[in-house]
Length: 584
Image 1: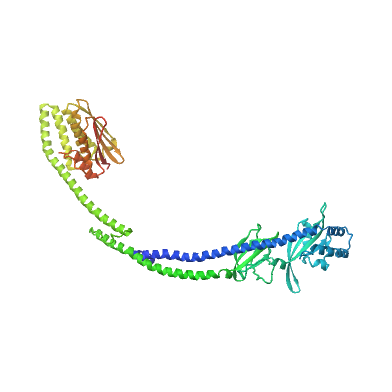
Image 2: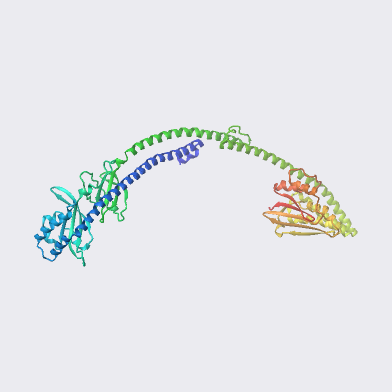
């Protein structure tokens, strides 16, 4: 609640200053953080590229060793001397000692050009496992490797074994492959074992000189380091969660020995082995830490400078606004005063001041127009009152004439007197300016009946009024002057019985439209231009009595400038006058 009150009661300067401070400070702090973050990510990408390229290169070098050994096994496999010796042993034609004596020179001959150690066992290998010559270059652990080789039927496989020699931990790689006859039925006659010391594989690994603690090794599915070279630092990284089956490289960050490392791995060989590499964060992010310190110093200096600039900028906006607020308060008191300050500015503040001054000017003009409109309306009301004075005397006189005519038996005179009396009675209407559509049409009918009696039914009148309009309010004496104008300038100029007049009333878009049209001779161009000037700013011809100009002015004064009279000429003859009045 206190916080909301502080925001509500604070000045515009405080609110905008707080908003802009937040708007600038948060992005700037984010920029500083993102600079450090993106730099770290860039270092990670570069390190990932280094590790990936290095792994790819080392993987190819180690794979060359594996391929070379597998090719060497093919040479051993296809040796005729070895084939004959193994077949003789399988047939039981050779004693144990005799086999050991003959296998030695053959193996020496087959492996003298390589640095690998080879052992060859016949099918009945259990008889020869105790000979040191055979056992030295074969896996020591009794894990079924020999029996497994018989099941591979010609394909070889790799395994690793760690043993202790004179208190020294040694790791060796073994390539195990069964030996089959070279002719059908290709039966298994022996097993070869090629030992490769881990040191020979480690020597093929290339480390990155730019990172002093760069470490590369081979790990198996149980997270064991299969190389363990003394000259390299061992890092215990759990790779078991990231075993690769596709041979693709992967890069991630691991935590080991209370230190973070960039780590990458790639599958190698046909086992669950991986070639893995790590680089400590400390070897990579030294320059980043310096960049972070420099970045935060720059950010802090920028925040101070931004605060100073914001105060200056906010004053340039809030001072003009406070000035306008002062003028608005005067406006609430009814004082229309122009703002003379900041009008020369070309920015939004200048436009705001110009708009305020334009509003004041518009209000003054509107007040003047309202006074003028009220004056016109009052003048028209006075004219209406003046026209209502004489009808009282005429109405009473006509009533006497009607009584005399009826006494004398002159029905036509009595009917005309009655119609004229009704006409005058409607014009009085207790001084009210509004009537109904029904009464307005009745008033028009009284006038036209008088004219028809006077002219001996010299023209025809037709009415077409929408029934839903009968009881709606309508301005009094707005149709009769139009009809009178049509009779005077149209019907009386037509041959007897040829004149026709149509009075239509209907609703259109919330307005009541009354159309008075005839088939008379129409009007000249000069007269039609004079009629159109009624709706323009040009002065119209002066009319006497309640004429077209009076009706048009009363409609505009009462309902607005969008209402009034419009005029249309037919292509042949006649004139159409349309009265626009809102539905109420």
